Image (tube, rainbow, N blue to C red; front, side, top):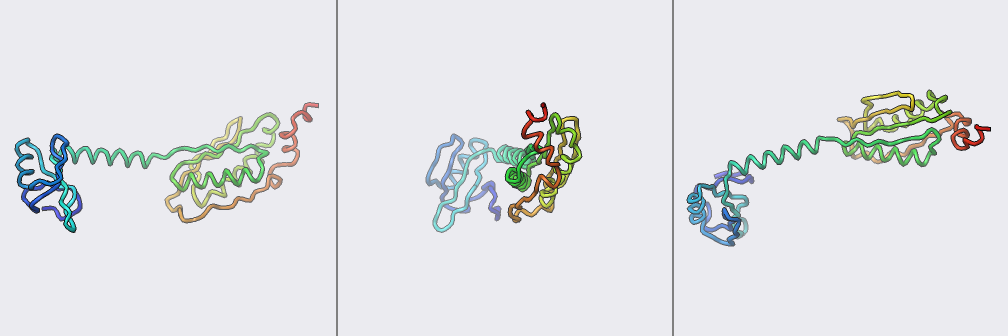
Length: 207
């Protein structure tokens, strides 16, 4: 008889009575274990105990093919594990003229995504005259990525004509107990004031 809490095949009467779900899915509140064993053998199946009786409670058994049941359970656990290990990719977009409050909000979002195991893409796309300030925009994105360094590491960086993309993955040493970081970044420290004006008032640049 198995001493663990795992289901086990009953081969002898370890208790006089048991509650039972038979091979036709019928529930019997109380039946002699010897009768349940006979029923299982007559149908070429196993009597499997899923719960031992404690404090006057009857054991709980089922009549089934234990080998098939165990195979199905292992397959289900493997699928669940694969699903759990599959990370979701979350993209957060930043514009060159994003304000500090939006930066804080998006960084906190990125941290939460990383803490639960998702990959995060930090993207800054440039349009029109913004492309003149590509280096400044990348420096800004680097600052933003640096605020996530305690939660994830950069695994990929792409530079295209339309912008810069940084991909971050959760580190193995990430401490989920660490609270949200308050981001404090000023656009003026990286992106020239002229660029912000150009973005905010494109009609003036057209004159």
